[in-house]
Length: 304
Image 1: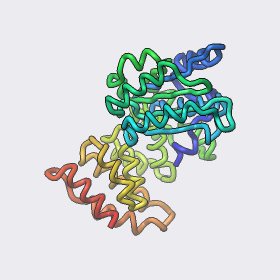
Image 2 (image 1 turned 30 degrees about the vertical axis):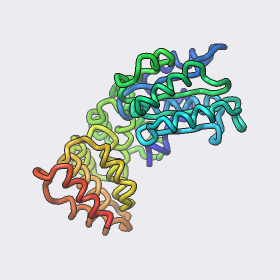
Image 3 (image 1 turned 90 degrees about the horizontal axis):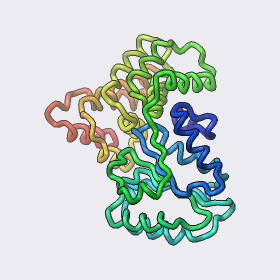
């Protein structure tokens, strides 16, 4: 996946939001630098990427970097566990980093417990909170954080990110029209832009690339493409949480699935052609009346 392979590893590689990221670096350079950070922004804006940049900046090992998706681990027991473990010294780093993604998803009791923890963070411990819904975060928590509010990227920044990936992939014939179409459809989301590029990077025909991108226009975040990738594994346990969280239009999702697997069927690699054909057949009929139930049923059948 391009989004994983080309995630920025340093502040120098982070494109866009220059004044905001410069402010973050200046804060980190202080002798009394902040130890609690809150990254906010739309899906794909670089919140989690920014949090992981702290890992590299502080030189935290994998063993001293703890990642929690608060949408799945939202209860007070998780915060209690973090409170206890954060008192321990790092294993082989100068500091220990806790990344709490989608922090707006924690329960009320967990938020109160977290507030107490952030009021006086343990020594040699850094906390990075991420959320796409900052309005759901208690003001008392926000006041304890250095806030990094990431804005949607401009077209020039999106094109720069895409071109950097294409250079690394040694692809020099991607039509400019395709890059601009991606920049238009991703609505300032770097994550969505890279996912869209991933969907057409192996297609040689410009017209076909544009058709596929047009089919994905109704899905404006990475949720839809994550569902498509999960369908590739035919693993219902992987799909269940993605479908539960999906709140988009079912018909837009169906069109995206058809476009995604049409691309696979047109690819030179024939290994996944039978899977792509079966998915296209399952998702061929409209869900105008069944809506999300139709999406869930088709995904379930695809995993049988």
